[in-house]
Length: 220
Ligand SMILES: [Mg+2]
View 1: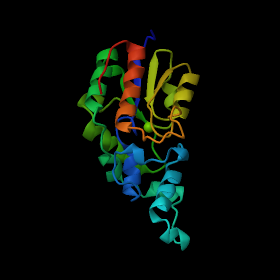
View 2: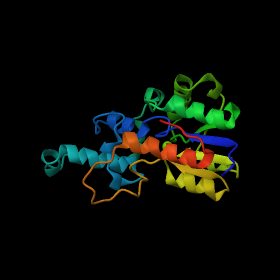
View 3: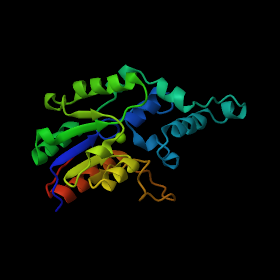
View 4: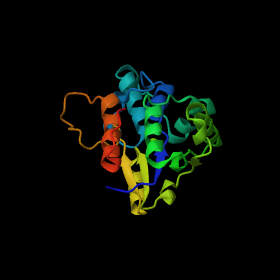
């Protein structure tokens, strides 16, 4: 069994539903929580996913007329306001997950780590999100910055949905649990006709990963 003394928790798409919220905010997703709307073939590229969904929605009338305006990366990210970042819905299992982790490693050793965009508005909104949605004991247990891998050591666990973050963390000697999302889930069969139930697949990937590490069950 792996000995873990510290847990680094990603925020976007682990503790909240950022991706679908952003696509909903841009008017191309029906809800701010249903990951089955995300096109898996776009991988880790939310701007490409946004444009793909926009084309799908506008086809055939606008696209055939050449009037389907695509959004560039700068425009996509700059549109997200401080209130957007602060109000992104938390996942339904937020409290259960945090309580479980605090029971395993202690409150002082649970750290929320989140990478901001280049906008100061994003940094402020993420801090506001932490204050709005997380318990008081986590209000000073966070790191906002793109280098989560600097927190890695042989006793640390990163829980993240970004494969690159997990690989970098492991590359520096840490452990990683990758939360399954459409952009990182390679088990899915491209010829599979049945849609994946992300309300089940995402929490079950966390449940399985945490059991493998701590040998203590969690139900999300
Ligand atoms: Mg994330």
